[in-house]
Image 1 (cartoon, each protein chain N blue to C red):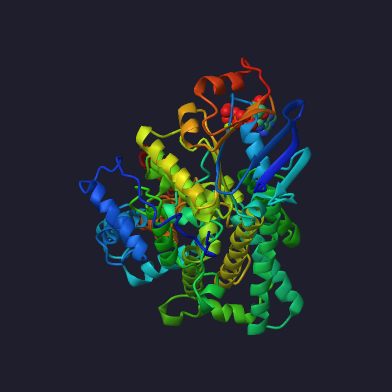
Image 2 (cartoon, chains in turn purple, brown; image 1 turned 45 degrees about the vertical axis):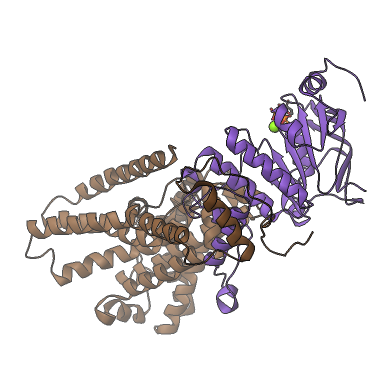
Amino acid sequence: MTALLEAHGIYKNYGHVEVLRGVDFDVRAGEVVSLIGDNGAGKSTLVKILSGVMPPDRGELRLRGEPVQFESPLHARELGIETVYQDLALAPDLGPAENAYVGREILKPGLLGWLGVIDKKTMREKAREAFVSMGTDVKDMDAPVAALSGGQRQSVAICRSVMWAKGLVFMDEPTAALGVRQTRKVLDMIRRVADQGVAVVLISHNMPDVLQVSDRIQVLRLGRRVVEYGRGEADVERLVGAMTGALDTVR
Amino acid sequence: MTVSPDARGVDVNAPVPPDDESTTTTGLPSLSTQANTLTTGPVEPESPELRAAQRARLRRRLFGSTPLLMAGVLILIFLVFTVAHPGTFPAFGNVRNMIDDTSLYLIMGVGFTFVMIAAGFDLSQGSVLVFGQVIAAKVMVAVGGQGGWTVAVGFVAAILGGAVWGVFNGLVITRLRVPPLITTLGSLGAALGVANLLTQGQDNTPTPAALTTLSAQLPWGMSWRVWVALLVAVVAGLYLHLTRFGRRTFVIGSNEEAARRSGINVKRHVVKLYVISAALAGLAGMMALINNTTTTVGGHSTDSLTVVTGVALGGVSLFGGSGLMVGTVIGMFVPTVLSNGLISIHVQPFWQQVATGFILVLAVYLDQFKRRRRDRV
Ligand SMILES: Nc1ncnc2c1ncn2[C@@H]1O[C@H](COP(=O)(O)OP(=O)(O)OP(=O)(O)O)[C@@H](O)[C@H]1O
Ligand SMILES: [Mg+2]
C-alpha cells in the first residue's frame, strides 16, 4: 500500500538555525501516525511544510504517490489535507458553526446567492449535525467561541478540521489544553476518524496517549527522524530514550 | 469510504463515546438519542435543544446588545433636554435639524463601521470628504452646465475621488504594513493639503444651479441627504450582515491569521474596506456640497472625532470582530443630539467637543470592559 503523503529529505532553515535536516516522513490512509520529539525538535515546522503553510528549502513531497508542491494552505486543503493548529486559529467573536464554515461559506440559491448572500441556517444545521456525530458537547452553535471553555474550543477546532478532511488531518497537540475526560474523547474521535479511512497525524507530548492511539510512532530529534515504531513495539521508556538521544539505537 | 462533497459527520453509525463531561442531567441516554437522530437524518428543526439555542440567540441579541442600550441612552438625553428646554428643543424643525446633521456623519460612519469591524481604523474621512467635494466642484465646472446631469457627474467624481484615497490607504496598510492609524493620519493631512492646493484654500469654486434647487428641497419632509444616508445605511447593513463579504469582514477583525489560513485573501479584502470607507466619505462630501451649495474646506477637521464616537457608542468594537450597522445608526445620533441640546440650553458650543471627546473615551472603555468580561471563562 503506497503512502497517502510522504516526505523525503526535507530541509528547512530559519536564518542560520537548521531546524529540519533531511527528515523523512510518511503516513497511509486510515492510520494514526504520531510525530513525537522534544521541544524544538522541529515537529511544528515539519507539519507546516506538510500542510502547505511554507515550502521546504529542499526535499520532496509526494501525495498518493505523485510529487506535489503545495502553493498555500488553501491548496493543501483543496487536496484534502486539514490541520488543527496548535493555536486553534478560531475567530473568537464568531460561533462554532460560523467558524466551521469560514472561507467555505454556503451561499443561498438563486439571485440571493449571486449577490453573495450566505445561507446561515443551512450552515448552522450542517455544522450541528457534524459536531453531534463527533460527540462534542458544544450545545450553542452561535455563542461566540471566546465564551467557551478551553476544551470546548479545542473540540470546535478539531471538529471543524475533521468535518472537511478528505484525506489527512494534522493535529498539533490537540489535547494540550484538555482534562482527562475530554482528552479521552478526542482520542476516541481520532480513532474513529482513522477508521473512516482518513489519515491522522498526531503531535503530542503525552506518551501514554500516543501509545494508546497510534498505529505507528515516528520520533524526531534535532531535525531528523531517528526511529519509527509500530503498534506494540514501543513503551514510554523507549520513546523518551529516542527523543532525548539517551537510547541511540538507529533502527 | 464515501465522501459527500460538502460537510459530513465522521461516522454517524459509530457508537458515540459516553459523555462523562456532560453536566446536564440527561447524561448518557440523551446522547445516544442524539446519535440515533443523526442516523435517521438531520436534527429535527423542532427539537428542544434547537429551540433552547434559538432562545439563547434571541436573548444574546436583545440583552447583550449595545444598540438597544444606546437607544435608551439617546431617549434619555432627548428627554433631559426636552425638560430643560421644552419650547424649542423637541420642536419638529429642531428634530429635523438633528437628523439632518447626523446624516452626514452617518454616511461616513457606515464606511467606518466596515473598517473597524475588520480591526482597522480610518482617520482620513474628514479630509477625504473635503477632497471629494472639491473634486466634484472642479469636475462640475469643467463639465459645465447648470442642470441635473452636471450634478450627477459631480456625484460620480466625489465618490471616485474619495475612493482613490481608499486605494492609497488600503495598499499602504496591506502592502507596506504601515499601521492604519499612521497611514490614515498621513492621508488626513495629505488629502486636505491637496484639496487646499486645488482651491487655494478658498471656498469660491462655482457650483451648478441645480445644486441650489436640490439643497432647498425637502422630499417627504427631510432633506435629500437624510434619504441618501438612510439608503446607504440600509444597503450597507444588509451587505455587512447577510453576505459572504460581510461575514469575512468579521472573521478578519476577529482573527486575521485564522482568516488567512482559511484561504481568505485578507489583503484584497482590507483594501476593499478602505475603499468603501473613503468612497462614502467622498459621497458625504457631495452631500455637504449640496447642503451648503459651496465647498467647505475648513469645516471638517473634527468630523472623524464625531464619526468614531458614534460608531464606538453604537457598539462596534475598536478591536474588531463585532458590531451591528444598526448600532452605528443609533450611536451616531448621540453626539449630534448632545451638541444640539447643549446649544439650545446656551452652553458654549466648544463644550460639545469636550463632551464628545470624553464620551469617545468612555465608549471605548465600555467596549474593553465588555470584552474582558466575555473572555473571562
Ligand atoms: N519562525 C521562526 N523563526 C525562527 N526560528 C523558528 C521559527 N519557528 C520555529 N523556530 C525554531 O525552530 C525550532 C523548531 O521549532 P518547532 O516549532 O518546529 O518545534 P516543535 O518540535 O514543534 O517544538 P514544541 O514541542 O515546543 O512545539 C526551534 O528551535 C524554534 O526556535
Ligand atoms: Mg510545536
